[in-house]
Image 1 (cartoon, one colour):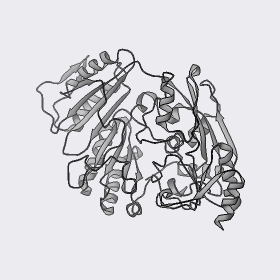
Image 2 (cartoon, rainbow, N blue to C red):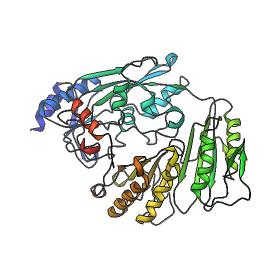
Image 3 (cartoon, rainbow, N blue to C red):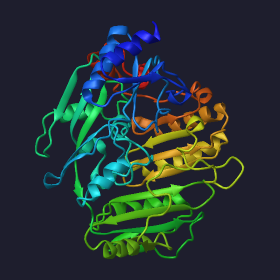
Image 4 (tube, one colour):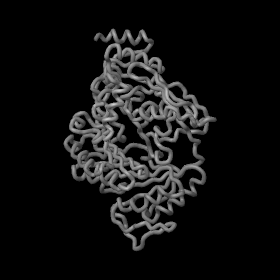
Length: 459
């Protein structure tokens, strides 16, 4: 098909279009055209052109996670939503905001802060847009207290593969109609439709914030007596990081002091691990001091600060191959083309395995790994040096799944990996709901026109 035919068709529909370049690649696959719609109606026009010419489309916002997920089987048109960034519609009295998909989370936060409110999410990838936030389902530390974007979403407008515009939910919190559609599209990597705008439930900005931080050395110093806090005995006689965290974390997460997040950063298996707890709202400083006392028995250097640790709310930095951990240059999102990033989830009863498993698998595979994530929500991210040999990455991933997926409790997903490495990997592991997911894809996109191949099972 002549490029001019598609370009003319898009321009006739009133949509700006340009030829694609190297910077527009989707997980290594280069599209032929880039469409730049400014509304849901223009997205619909793009999809009607794609349907008429049998083209595959992939949506993007800030482009920060285009290398996540599997490469698309086809990518003819990249639907760039960067122009869909009108000022959000903020109904402060209803604690609700509606934002176009191309609005960045940072811009949304600034607009909401003027009204003393916030979308209570910490997005770990700077530059993420509202559409990208929902499409990948990513969340940060405060998911423990406030949930994820999926939980805060109350309305969504999407464009389906045939150009149909579908709306779900409303602009008031009590309107629950259509919740399922919004949840269905969250985390679908654009394989069911293109998100045009979203409406979220908001929270007032907290009156104050305080963090409790502590470092767990390896080995942990033994104490002669167990530590007791409000009738609860915390075992402090163990000599490894995992045992110390097992002792203190349940007491913190179940505390009536109501922490908003409990995070850890462990950049190297042979080094110390840092734990940080966020307390928000009324009497935050006093509640933080009480948590500091609770943690102090097992984590002797716990202290209260008014600022988070520098790593808070960010993905782990990959260890340098031949240097100290964390010196790999700019964090997991810095070198998108060579990034090796995995996500690990587990159930509460297997908390220790969630962060010890990656380090054990790393030693067995002969690689270095950095682990960072939520001790409260049991979601962790693992970064490897970008030049790790593909065979070692494959051995690490296989070993980690052997540690984590016992009895089907844990999940290991490879979010990003270089092309040569990715060819050796099963990105998604076992997905029990795959038959249902296939049926949903068939219902929404029977011709596999939207991000084909990006999701589990080649969906």
